[in-house]
Image 1 (cartoon, helix red, strand yellow):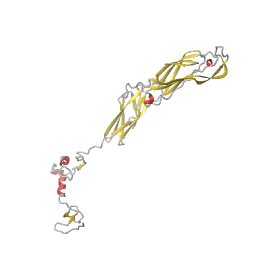
Image 2: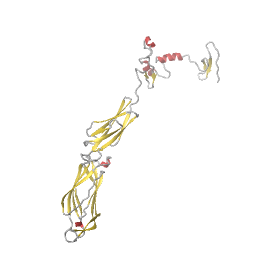
Image 3: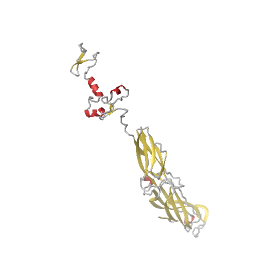
Image 4: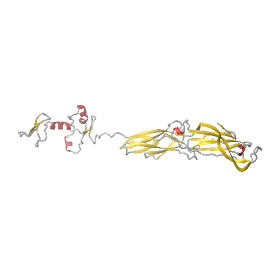
Length: 342
């Protein structure tokens, strides 16, 4: 339905489709005038009326200290009156005397391993881990700390901290490491409980013997069947017994290093010969950089050739991981095989 302004004593009026009645119009006839708006506006400033708000919702604004209903008249001429606004949730805010609520506090999480290996003095094994914090929202600062003497921390003001072991844990997860993340004067903290694992023992994963598993090249017997081991300068070959053990490093709580995320160690072996009837015997030893490793035992000697008198060697073995003694073995080497205790 079309409408047009009509001249009248009190101004123009037009028919409003939305109101279904004739109403006063603005001079240009573009807008419907609602006479009650002036009254509603005055009541809104006093927080006595607001379209769409319940009395309970209006109460916080009505009680605001700068409600003009309660202000002395002389204050009305001072340009210091705040503007209150409705933020939702049934509350009005009037800065600066009643600032809006702080934004939601930040959150922070920690990622990284929870086991750090320990090493003894003189060992070159890894003995540190890295923990990384992630703050949300971004843009804040980090601060790391620990109350435990089991570890030391470096780079404590960065998102990633280095945790270095200094003493073994006495129980699992007894070493707390805490990060505090601060953003907009609000802080959030997160703690991870780590364990300092000391190599303590070896688990025997497998123990097998192959009667002809080791190929030997030795000097030939000068007089086979003579009962001595005199040798020539020529080389002779034969197959000797080979015993193979597979070990896994355990910590003080019986955890396998490979199961708790520790993948690098410094494993060494030390041999001492106690008795030997095999002259000029040479043994091969070697370190291992990983916590699960293999140890092999064999004897190659001229005395063990066909026609030789045979011989025996008794040796003691000490195995260390990260500088800590984890196993001691007595080995008896014979031409027929190797016995180990334990």
